[in-house]
Length: 475
Image (cartoon, rainbow, N blue to C red):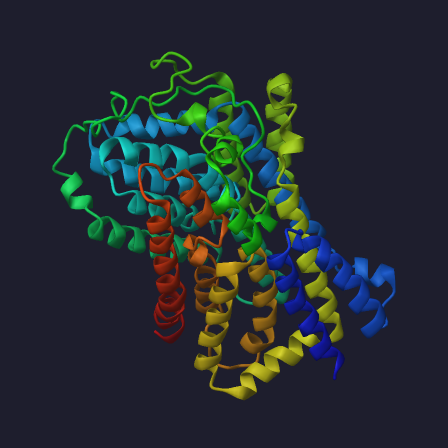
């Protein structure tokens, strides 16, 4: 057996092990990089460490550090309150508010499960109180998180753009971002239509369903500094084993979990912690200005996003050191560990020539268009059960030789299709996002709701790769 095939089998084994056991795949990948690099490629430790993605590491630390500060000083709560207030008494607008708020959170640096953990309890609380279909509401939140996930200053966007840039392929950051947002928005619109959205439009002023607390739908908490643990979901939590643990938790366990009811109690409708008319604090205004500055400096002036994010984070820390002192511990270290570990292993595979070997093999097996469809399917199926970030970090490099071989497949369109295929399937209950929705749903039969999520997840996993492949690769 060739060393190339051995390294591929080791990569598959990593996914299986991280799925079966609640172990961070990044840890497994670092060990795999050491063993494969040393035993199969004859590399020294210094050469193996040369594959560590320092620039990507800095990007991820900077983005998640800045987002942690935005949550700590109440900016996230403030944005949610403003958005809900803006729609007046229109009940039909609530699902769309949740969609766009979640998209905004991932667009400015929240990892997708973190955004869902923050917004899902609020959204599903509204659904239970005002008779909104909970399946629609939960799926709108997840698709919102995935829709904003590929902005140039986001986690997914940072991973994808760094890989494509390093490979020397044509890069269009905004194309991938808008494709992801557009596809997820279209799916959300379809869900809104199918699950009673237009009936809600006839209800100008919402009334709680019988037995619920008598509150207006917009009596959310005013913006206050966050307390307690940061609502970040670990990347290894996307392993199927942990999803099953999440779904089997008792109600008491759910109340204690970050994505459960207690973790979001301060954000639940009807729970007040301050004056409804309180305005934004100076910290929150400066945070919003900082986020805008991050986008301008990185997109217009092409400054390094990691350094810019950490600089803005430092400014916020100086303004309010006591509020921000927890931010460094709230950086999404498990997520970062996973990403840089997988990237290091893929770098070892690249130096071994395995990436070129796989790309050439795929190109020879079938036509270029069918090969592109096959890769999109692999990304969707694996990501439905494992980490989307790990899939992006491993499959895109495998496609690089195929795209560079003059196959005629547009690299920009394919990257966008691969990005959407590998993330839109996170509605599955075997992914962290789907499990968070299941954990926070109220007033429904959980077994029935689980079956609905599984059916929907299966449909998306089978249909999405074909649709995005046809739209962005074939056309």
